[in-house]
Length: 195
Image 1 (cartoon, rainbow, N blue to C red):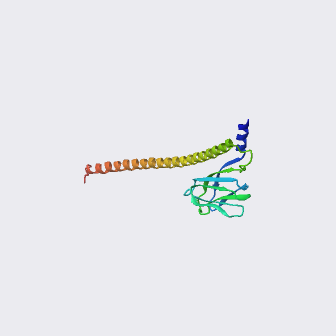
Image 2: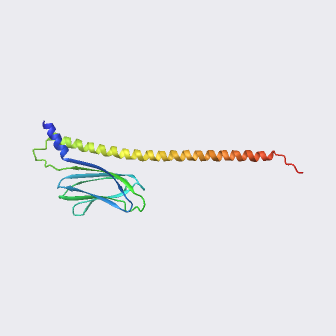
């Protein structure tokens, strides 16, 4: 029963959310998380489609101070520990692009701080939290691999289509040249009569 209570408490003290958004050209998308002092938050993102697969990202505290900033990255991660209570903002900006919309997948992980001196936190719970954080990292890596696999598959299919159509064009040109050569050689052997 105690183990069940500890597991339930660790699940309640961790929040996770995954999102997929489209950031249109020349715009930015911002999101908020309300954190308390000593809470931890990690934002991981990756651009799946659009343009050069890059995006600007920044994370600010309640007073507007920039805590993390990444410019023109295709994938990234930012982790913070809240120093004050308030609303923390993170934004994805596609303002550098005038034509290409970008599709961004991102995850937000957070750990709600519970003081160590509280009787609630047992060594087993600390280990469960540690394992939960490790599992979240594995999940992020799997999502990254899925997006990369999709991108590589699209590239391979595109290359395959180009090779196929190039081969068809070469066959058409080859048969045209053969037909022309037969016609041209045939004209050498024709006898022309002059009356």
